[in-house]
Amino acid sequence: MTTLLDIRGLTKKYGPITAVDDVSFSVDQGEVLGFIGPNGSGKSTTMKIVTGFLTPTSGTVEVGGLDVTRHPLEIKRRIGYLPEGAPLYGDMTPISLLNFVCKVRRLSKEETKRGIEYAVEKLHIANVLYQPIETLSKGYKRRVGLAQAIVHEPELLILDEPTDGLDPNQKHEVRELLKEMSGKKAVIISTHILEEVEAVCSRAIVIAKGKMVADADPLSLQSRSRLHNAVGIRLPAAQAQACIEMLNGLGGVHQVRTTVETASMVELMALSTDNSEILASVHTAIDEKGIQVNEIYVERGRLEDVFRDLTYAVEGLQQDPDANPEASNA
Amino acid sequence: MLNIWIVARRELSAYFTSPLAYVFIVIFLALAGGLTFFFGQWLERGQADLQVFFIYHPYLYLFLIPAVGMRLWAEERKSGTIEFLLTLPVTTGQIVVGKFLAAWVFAGIALALTFPMWITVNMLGQPDNGVILAAYIGSWLMAGGFLALSACVSAMTKNQVIAFVLASALCFVFMMSGVEIIQSFFRAWTPQTFVESVSELSFLTNFNEVSQGVIDVRDLVFFFSVIGIALFVNTAIVEAKKGV
Ligand SMILES: Nc1ncnc2c1ncn2[C@@H]1O[C@H](COP(=O)(O)OP(=O)(O)O)[C@@H](O)[C@H]1O
Ligand SMILES: [Mg+2]
Image (cartoon, rainbow over all chains, first blue to last red; front, side, top):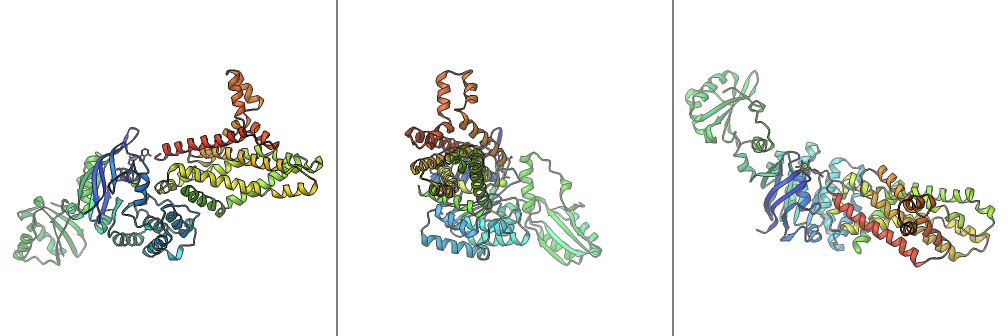
């Protein structure tokens, strides 16, 4: 694997504010890195430094082995960047904007034609190419922003909150695109939307208050959830009481929560001690007690929980057990 | 060089896709023409020259040029496009020069559209066309000086109105530095040589010389130095302010 981006000890201060605090990581070809963190955690600042817009206070950033502060132009040539909010010239049409970008990036006529065709096709913007950008819907504007970032087929694609402010359908479309686009590139996507990480990323870095607090693939992050290996049970309301009693008495069960409760149906969640696997013993106990259930499943874990656990401490917020949306009745 | 040209071309075409350009040109032509006819009593003077036409240019430029220059950077910073622009493989200096050139060419187009005045004066009599050409060049150079100052101010703020007001004020100081009020202000507390060098910095003094038909190397050096220094400062301001 070729390392495309290498960040060492990156720190950025805005006066007294330390926006990025000693961040180090590298990204290889083919990786789609989700850069997640609460608002104000330093995601955009990091991206602005990598793209050469801002200079770091200390630390180094290398793209394809070249130092960003020493070879800014060469690096900008290799990167495709969608800044936060996708700012574009409203009075230009998408086609004139794409042509401008190709010219600045010194693509040949052939490359320009190919690049624009590729981007237009990938982002489905053929029907708005000749309309001023300011008259386009938010979804189309974002796509033009993405098109602009990929026309030159960059090695490193950096997207700052590419789906922020889009409606659910548009979000879905952009995510599909991101999956298609990755391929041989390295992609970094910042977001505070966790489904996005699950949907498109091969790796996630969690950042809080400028500090890196986790670097793992989404699955292993999920497994850090308190709900990892919990067992969910859906059953008729009449059976619920018996089942709760049974679970509370079962070894290895740490807590039982009622997650859904209607007149006819109840959903329970049995959290295991130390996230150990309890499906088998729960299953056996249900059979033994003759409890009638409609569905049993194992929870992989929720990124949200992990995210909250990881970032709350750093942000100095109190973990409030009652803040959990699921009612507890252990 | 190519980068400067690419940036300048995009900027220039942006002028003509917005109504701003046309509004500006119409107002410039109307004011330039109106002042010449009504205040300058051009036809009544019975002289075949364009002196009364050019004499008003510094005052027109005092607010029209900041109107062109105010958006150059303020708009870019306000809308966030500056981040898009500065992360393309172009240097800040190239963008500064490209933007300036586009605006200067635009001002030149507006100025060139006053050609009916020149045709008229040639129909009415036999003017010294060399003098007229010199005055046109001088006027354009002065517009360039004002523009560079305005661009510089525009880079300091996100607010176009503030950029406009500050740029007008700055242009006013540069224009009037040869005039008695400003001179006496400096004379009160600075040595004579400084007062003289301030007066040397006056756009009005330099422009008046050129518009008489004498293009002195010193006037050229003056305007190009003002432009060069202003653009240099402009680049530094953009660099310093881009994260803010
Ligand atoms: N230009 C700036 N001047 C001062 N502080 C800033 C500036 N930009 C960002 N910050 C601060 O730096 C921190 C990180 O911001 P940012 O990188 O935008 O976070 P994120 O993209 O993760 O929301 C925040 O506390 C923010 O207020
Ligand atoms: Mg951000």
